[in-house]
Image (cartoon, rainbow, N blue to C red; front, side, top):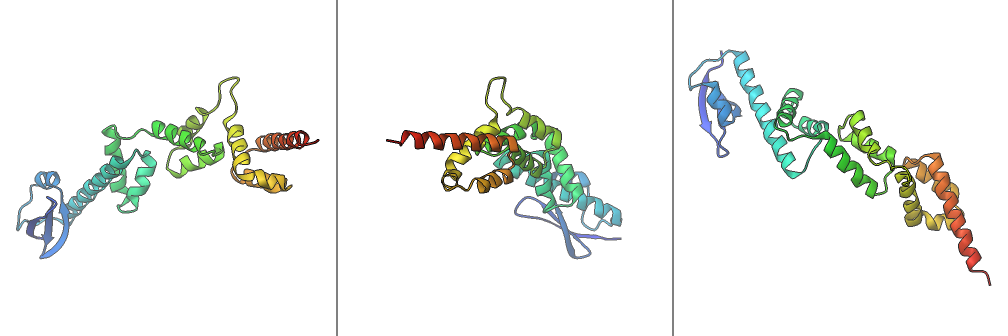
Length: 216
């Protein structure tokens, strides 16, 4: 059985464990205290593995706290980031603990992200794709996007976004007669055919009015 030959406290307040003369891993202070292990103890291999898992889980939780201190994360996004450095079990346990502590609110994250993307003139489809990429489930993302929808009498956000994009980025192409190129660009951005048709018709009418105003 592996023998715990040395225990060394690190500069970060963790406890480095050496089995049979070789460094294995380190434990945080709480986990180390709860493990009740001492130098020269002989542990079963499964006991060593359990300690390793607890170490990884605590390190994953510490990383989760660091990420959440920088900004809010959806649970799925946090899990994805943790999985880059930790195993699935440790990442999932850290996310579960963060949720238990009340540090995760997917609904709020989705609403704020959707509103932010709308201000950047993104289409509904782009917003849904972005939320999905951040690990937000389909139903939560759909509710966030639905919250952007207008009340009766208000303008469709997609229409407003597409109109703003046409005026800001594609006016010169329309003036050059490149209507199909502009329509294709808007379609790639996720706008519907109805929205594209509406904003292009508006732009065409506006250009005709300008030409009419310029006649002697």
